[in-house]
Image: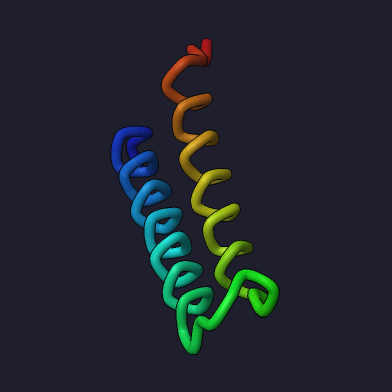
Length: 64
């Protein structure tokens, strides 16, 4: 997998986590005191960011 493809995949996974988080946070929204996020959405976003960072690291390092 090329670093460019890996970066694109990581950004799509992170975007999916952000969209899922917004969906969960605004479902049955009445006020800010009731926002409790379950496990899953933010972790998916974090995994996507880690994949993206790994791709950026791969593109900046040259292996001999």
